Image 1 (cartoon, rainbow, N blue to C red):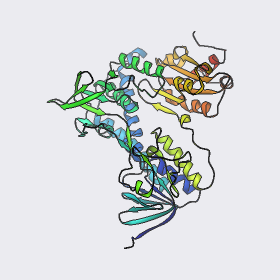
Image 2 (cartoon, rainbow, N blue to C red):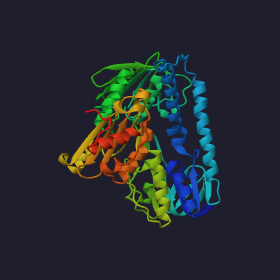
Image 3 (cartoon, rainbow, N blue to C red):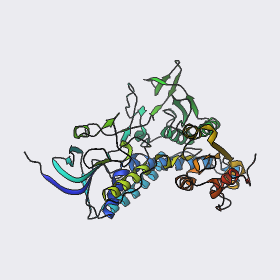
Image 4 (tube, one colour):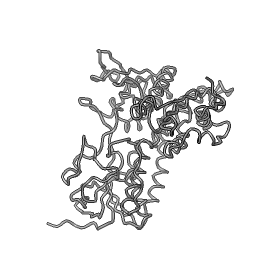
Length: 462
C-alpha cells in the first residue's frame, strides 16, 4: 500500500534543535528547500530544557550572591529570600521571547515545518504520522536526553534529572548532585547560592575532569570556600528513599542524605527506534558515526549535534548544521576542528577554555616541546574591583602557536571569543602580545598573560 506523500525537498531534517534549525536556516539562505521535522518545540533541549533556562537560573543565583555580599562593596542590602515563582517566571520569560523569535526566523517559504515524531524509513525518506517526506539529502539531528546509570530510576520527584530541576517550585533544603561535570557543578552552584546544602558525588578523581587539572583544583578550592561539599573518586552505589528524601551510598559504604538527588552523569544520544540502523547507519553506543564532513557513509545522509560523538554543546550543533547545509550546497566548507570549539561552565567561579589541556598537548607533541604560563587575576585591576580570584593559563608549542587557553574566574566566558580566535588562527604569543587590550577589563588578563609568555610581563607577579 503506498504512503501519502508529504513532498520532496532538497533537505529533510529530522530534529529541530540547535543543529537541525541552524542547518534549515543556512540551507534556506542558499536557496535550498527544507522540511524540518520535530515532535517537540523548535529549539530543542538547549532553548527549552538546557542552556538558556539553566543560565537564567545561574544569573538569578549571581544576583542572590551579590545581594548577600553587597556590604563588602559599601552597599547595604538584605537578601530576604528566593521567590522561586518569580525566578521561574523570569526564566520562562527569557525562553518564551527567544522561542517566539526563532519561530519568526523559521517562518519562510523555503522551510516547511512538520510537527510530529519522524522515523527514517528509507535512505532518502522520513515518515511522520503516515506521511512520507523525501529528501535529496537527509540530516539526522535528533539530539540527546538526560542519562542515568543502571539501577538508578529517575522518578522526577526525589530522584531528578536536569529538566525536572529546572521546574522545581521550591529551593530544596538539601541536594545530592550525582556527577561533577558541567551540568553537576552548575546546578550545585545555583542551589548553594539559593541557600541549599549541596553535596556533589563524582566517580572520577576531580571535579570538571575534562578541563585542565589546574582549573579543577581552583574550582574545588572555590567550592570548599563556598561550603559546597564534594566527594571525588567515589563511585555511586545505590540510592534509597527515606521519610524526608533520599540516602545515597557511595564506594566504601559512606552515605549522604538529602531532600533530592540530581542525576547529572551526562547526556545520551536520541537515536533508538528511529530507523537509523535499519537503513545502514552505523551506531556506536547509540552515537551516529560520521566522517569529518559529517557524512554517515549511507546515501546522502548526514548527522549533526549531540548524536555525533564529541562535545555536546549547542554552538557545536549550530556550526555543524551550517557546515552540512554548505556541504550540500557544494560550497566545500573547511572541516570543524573539535579542539577549536570554545567550552564554558557557568558556575561560580566560571570556567572557559579552548584548545588542548597541558596534559593533552604534552601527549600529542612531547613534554619537552610544550610550555605553559599562568597569569594570576590578582594582577588584574578589574578582577580586584570584582573581588574575583582565578587565572588565565596558556599552553603553547615552543617556538610555535598557542595550543590551548584555559581560564577560571568571574566572567571568563566572555573572554573565550578572543581565546578561540587565537587558537583557531594558530596565533603565536608574540603576535597576540602586540594587540591592545582595554584597561581595566577582565579581557586585559588575556593580554597580560600573552605579554608575560612573550617575555615582557607588565602586571604579572612572579
